[in-house]
Image 1 (cartoon, rainbow, N blue to C red):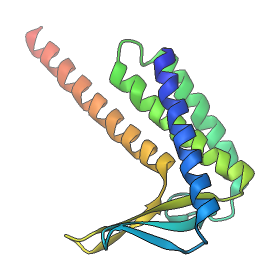
Image 2 (image 1 turned 120 degrees about the horizontal axis):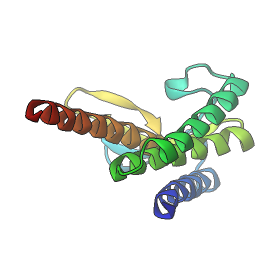
Image 3 (image 1 turned 90 degrees about the vertical axis):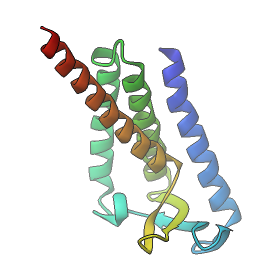
Image 4 (image 1 turned 180 degrees about the vertical axis):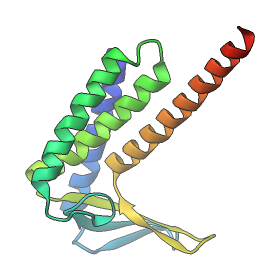
Length: 160
């Protein structure tokens, strides 16, 4: 169980370290190309939720985040027993939620910096950070876990 909490801690440390590097070494709005034009670092701040929604509603983010963190810990201890993929996904969610929560508490904004252009559809993806990536991967893994669990249950029903 401790190893799973280690995953959350790793996400938090990596997230905060990368954000610190961006804040210390880049001017707001500065972009450093990595694989031009598809990938770069862009120093950006977000005072809202995903894609800047609900900008300036910090009190709402504090309340929701505390509830989400409590829910993740509950599910980890009560519902994820025997499901390592589910545990891993919950800890990715926990690390991501806490990483962005730290920003909102101390900076009153979230530091974003990964800038991706998807050339096939010419889409400039919203700028994100390590915490956002962990949240996304966690959600995808939960969906995969639920899908696999459903398939297993259907297989059991057919056998019965």
